[in-house]
Image (cartoon, rainbow, N blue to C red; front, side, top):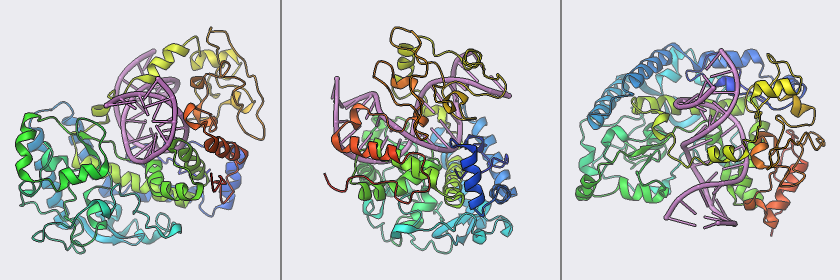
Length: 455
DNA sequence: ATGCCTTTGAAGTAT
DNA sequence: ATACTTCAAAGGCAT
């Protein structure tokens, strides 16, 4: 599986998460196939983390942390911060077009004094099959969702990139969420989508999908229709509910990839169920070359950086625990005794230092799994252990012998892409999953979506 | 109306 | 330090 080496370079330090779940041999093989060597990756990583970014990120992170507990002056603070950011950009921060992304103006941090040549081809030379711009689908909101901006607003961003008029009181033109400019959304944020939207688009790119009304779900179209082009006199209503809008997490590399490829998979597979589609996308993600993945990691890194700049006081903690704590409840249900990793290792005679046991997430491959068993000893509803009932077939993880013997919560999802859930048991999905199961781990297939073309 | 499913990765909390 | 959890997107489906 193509992976980026951690190299400790990522400003978010997330690369240690990029763990292969394929056999090492397989990975090695692929690595050999790729001209993109580990060294290349190291170079890439180092190039991704350049001096300016480091400074900027660290500064932003510092500010972020320092403001973590400051909930006052929320609006003003963000406004001020954005002003400063904008000024910084005016100072030449955004000035160079990124060859890989013709429409995207990159901030200097990504093009550090030329040290990270955007034309290095290590990041941007991703084939744009399907005739889709690499960022097109990454923009959560296509042009269709936007109307032409007011004619009085500047539209020429080709020179200044994502210049956002600081002096303009945007709230005077648009009804902004309580966060005002400071709540301008991040994901593929103002710099990206404002640039991608083409002439006539409001350069501020306000608002943004990352900002969700406190109420929760909101259709993207709806979101933009209401916020971006809402009229100022809707303000009074908001005053009644000066709730802080929800700032969404920046999308990670895989999420960006999914955004881009979902439509394609839907078209190819005649599928609409996201669960099934995501399984396909997950496999395709692993089948991507390092260069291809690097593109998305790079984009994700930019997203995080931009997010950090836009919302220095934001933390993922802000959205933590807001969703149903279903998993916790599930765990309570299934907590007959999956056992701690330590206990699990001991139980299976694994090395406590090197072997992995537990939920098979991250880090090393589960030895137990490789042996055809379960990463942890699954337990039935009565708490009795069920030990490795099935053997893997052609690398396919053991599938549940029965619902009783296979509580889904005991099945590491990464190893069970074919869970036949209630939502995937339709005939179509079933066939799709069966077929995809036959291709599981076959990362070299070109069309891993051999789903029925018709119903 | 709300949550689940399903994926990977980032970042949070818990131990 | 490590393990584990939550949330990002998506849309059909179940409750």
